[in-house]
Length: 242
Image (cartoon, rainbow, N blue to C red; front, side, top):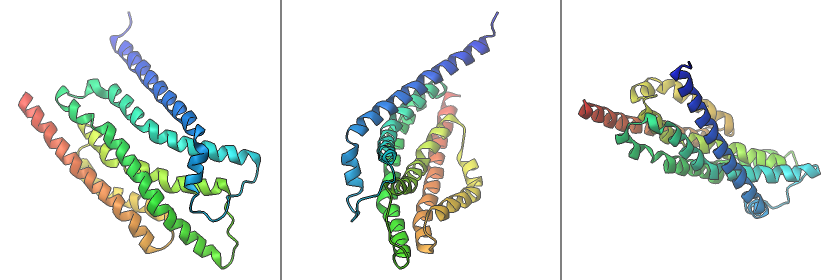
């Protein structure tokens, strides 16, 4: 006779597999749709460049277009992935907290877009200008499409993910995985890691570092505040039920 716990585990793994496949299908469909308009997206992303980007081989063109389509697909797939994650953990969330927890889906999508916008409209042009000024006196600047878009992705996508911190913390607090006390105790370590991230991806000047460090640290403090609110409501509901 099979152990009921084993059957339950198999059921959870099957459900996880099913939801991962749905998310992957959403990503591939979104990527295919984005690829149809990829030349228009490319033209918009390179609108401020005075020269055409260089390709060093035929495959570079496809690589660049695939990268652009993949980033667009990632943005489109995030709410799908969030919804699939929510449906997977929904049975573990108390019914009284489910309505508030489902706000995780639009919140994580909005924060990702805000993070991408911060990276693209603020950080990316600032760093690109710094690099251009640094090379202007000694080098002829000629950008390859692959290097340019790799640099753009590195300046934007990480911030899209980092800006999701408050929504993720809210969700994990609802599930009881984290709480404001743990987050407060980890503040020094978190600040240290965020400073390392900021210094690594910005030009070597204090102003650029501050422009990135301050928003990241504010996001962490906002996450702690959100965790406190969610945690108090969670304890209040538990006390009422008891």
